[in-house]
Image 1 (cartoon, rainbow, N blue to C red):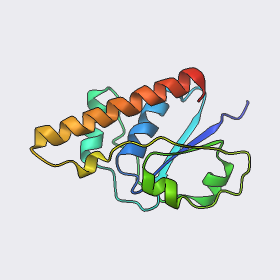
Image 2 (spheres, rainbow, N blue to C red; image 1 turned 30 degrees about the horizontal axis):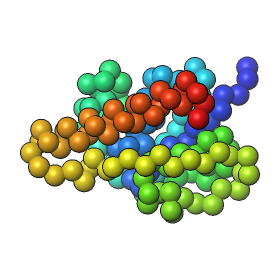
Image 3 (cartoon, one colour; image 1 turned 45 degrees about the vertical axis):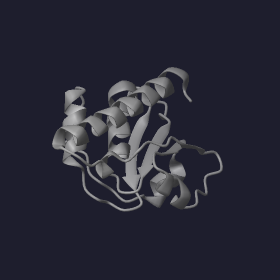
Image 4 (cartoon, rainbow, N blue to C red; image 1 turned 90 degrees about the vertical axis):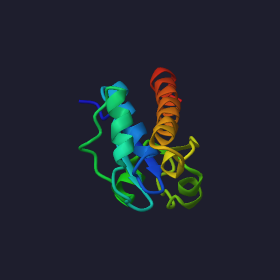
Length: 141
């Protein structure tokens, strides 16, 4: 069986954006890609991220919030950062064949206001990430 390209989504805390990207690529492209996500730190899975993904029909409730694993990082085919902090502080990648991209999205965990307004920010970010994942699955870039 041919090895599927490994996509490693990175964020600061591996609680929201990288989890949402992980969930969508698992749902839309797990037949073509191995998918993992991690953070510079592990902040735990954000319950609002779980809720908005359930609304989209994707269950990430069993995902774990993990710290970047250097072994996984260096065997990745794609390393995709989803926040500026992770992009700037991503550990050095020794694998020269890795494709590294930065897809910047606002941090919905920093949203303020009523619960409804906060959830709307989560939905906006979720939908933006889904659109970007769909493009990646369709075009490979």
